[in-house]
Each structure stands twice: as C-alpha cells, then as structure tokens.
Image (cartoon, rainbow, N blue to C red; front, side, top):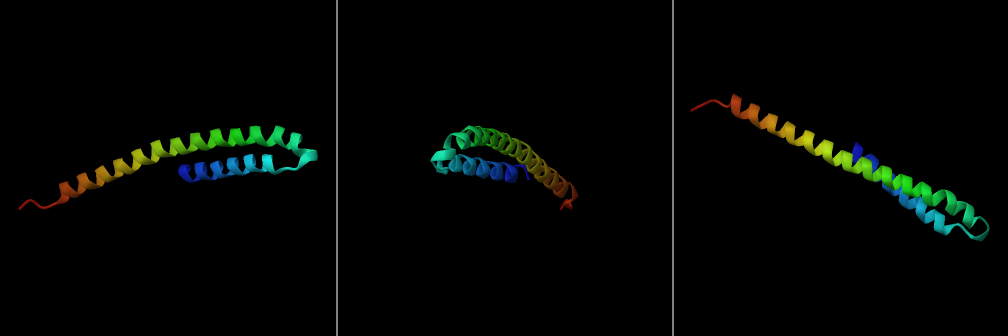
Length: 79
C-alpha cells in the first residue's frame, strides 16, 4: 500500500508541476508561487513513501517466504 501511495503522490507532484507551467499570463506568478513548492512537497512525500514501502514490504515478504519454506521442510516426512 505504501508503494501505491508513493506512486499516486508522484503523479500528483507531476501534475502540480505541469499545471504551474500551463497557467496563462495574468495568473502565472501566483500559480507558480503555490504549485511549484506544492509539487516539491508532494515529490518529497512520494519518495519517502516509496522508499519506506520498498524497505518494509520487501523485508516482510522475504520473511514470510522463509517461514513458509522452513515450516514446509519441518513437516515433510522423512524417507
């Protein structure tokens, strides 16, 4: 779930940055002052969530595979 949240935040950051550059002349300065820092905040949050998801989900999935393999070999009948 953390990986999905990171990906969504990354897309929101990209959209915010793109909209900051698409706003036309009269409102360009005001939009850039809000949207560019907002996109940087979203990008930092996306990176944090994505890295956190990679670290925690990779660790938990490897541990569950090891536990399953250990229990399967422990329950296997000996010939």
